[in-house]
Length: 341
Ligand SMILES: [Zn+2]
Image (cartoon, rainbow, N blue to C red; front, top):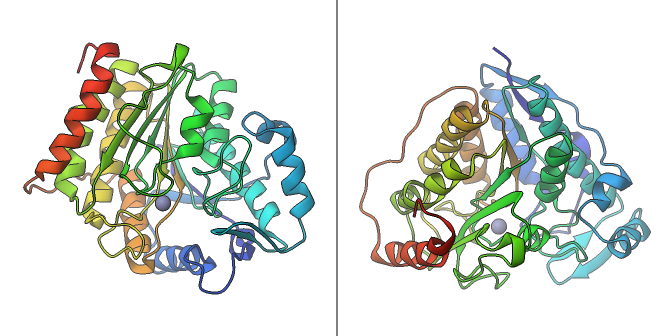
């Protein structure tokens, strides 16, 4: 059987948003340290390539691409949260390219599934604006690559604690990409309310579950089992991408959730088995947020074990009433479009 492909590169450590910034090179360093100490059988490390201008332009405006090109080689402040160092734009271009390569390898059957261990993250980057620690929208760029490679329907599942406003915007009026997000709400960046379900052709193909905070593995399990998975089964994606942010971790200094390593492993396992049922296992995880170095690195390691074949299920536990309420609000918003709900 083919292996789980892990893509990373030393250039990702050269993106330095400044001293004390939570999205620090130490995040990826810690992940790589854990993997070096406890390698996962059934995985191979691969070398990414940079995204081309055309691949970036599938998602981003010429103005944004020109603006970021001008910042290459310089230090600059894009917004209060988003800084670049001289290597940042090159790192971001390589992060987008790693995401594309992961899709290429999985679509071609050369990898069982893949995890792109990249920074900077991507899901806040809008077609025309870099923001929220993100320069290029890696997952949106990867979805476009998957479409070009013949995937007629692509599922993007986003479990980062923040709403992926940039990803939502990229596909809001389209049904060839189904976007499902569970996140803290109201919270940064402000989007992601349940009634945001898409427009035009894309109406019903954006799914937002906004949780108030303090939610557990069991809450996430309920949302997966009662909303995300039934919709995804009915959609029959030909490629599944995960915006894998680990800031819902219980120790995360930014997020306000109570998810554990076991919860992340269970979310990953449910995506792996969905992929195996509906699309020949074609599943790619892309690293987004996650700011507890220990929580992040242990959770990433647990997900890699799952990608390589370990089974996992959501720990039993009681769900919270506010999570149930959020689930009902989202399901009610989507019900007009989905007979399975
Ligand atoms: Zn986040």
